[in-house]
Image (cartoon, rainbow, N blue to C red; front, side, top):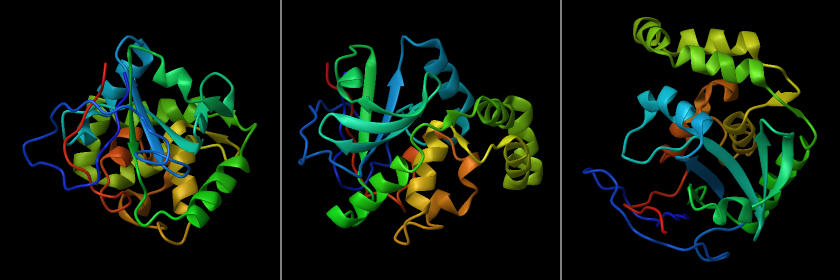
Length: 218
């Protein structure tokens, strides 16, 4: 299953279903951020469950990646760390939904900088300790503590476990965006990159061009 998002304002009633096959240069391209959810994958479902607190609509996502070409992306993955991956891995998976969001005012020059930022970290390991810290911060107990103490609770939990040369998927994408002056400290990027989960990054309309309801094909 594949989904791409149109560039208009979101509906206050939530997101409806709209099939839209991926077309490079039309509804996704270099510099776009991809978000995936695989309903048949226990880990994907688990991440979506733990990050449900930041879900604002009826779309769940559990993974983030940076598009670098028509059939290529760079992602931080539990299997292999930061690496290049063929997008057809997601396009051809009938259980996978993939959504693309376009950073605001994206130009070829900004896209090149985003890709270069990701390439600097190719070969870095996956930060299993950080993903565990994020899950702890997003547990029921963690959510209650966040309500009591604010974002500072999650910041402390995640910064304690964050490794400077290892990444989780949303941290890598947030880092690449935050490294660009056009997006630095905008929206959710005002928080530490290590605390940002795929769902809250996906929901951010300060970083990305706004879109209206759309959903997966298949």
